[in-house]
Length: 140
Image 1 (tube, rainbow, N blue to C red):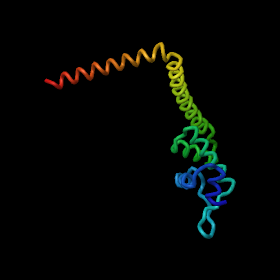
Image 2 (cartoon, one colour):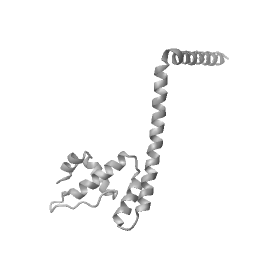
Image 3 (cartoon, rainbow, N blue to C red):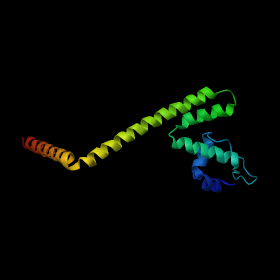
Image 4 (cartoon, rainbow, N blue to C red):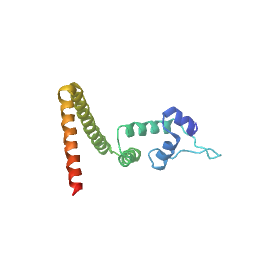
């Protein structure tokens, strides 16, 4: 299949597929006599793998390293596992940060009238005082 069909099948843009190839995240794609890329099932599987790992937040550098380890066909299981664990830890930290932000928003919504409005009014008053102080200083 050509790159446009591969893009449609994987949900990865043609530009991204070319980028994956350039960055060695997928193997070099064979070309037809006319120079068009001929993408087979093996490449589609690699594109989908890269897409999934990028969605999981893996950096290009770590992903390239993981793929190098896989492609070397040596016994690199422990290093591959270490890269995956590192990425999992990072994603769990991101999840925790997002959960904390969600919890904060729930709190604000749950306490909007008894807490947030009062706090916002205090902030507005402080802003007015600050502006008045600056205006008084500018007169001198």
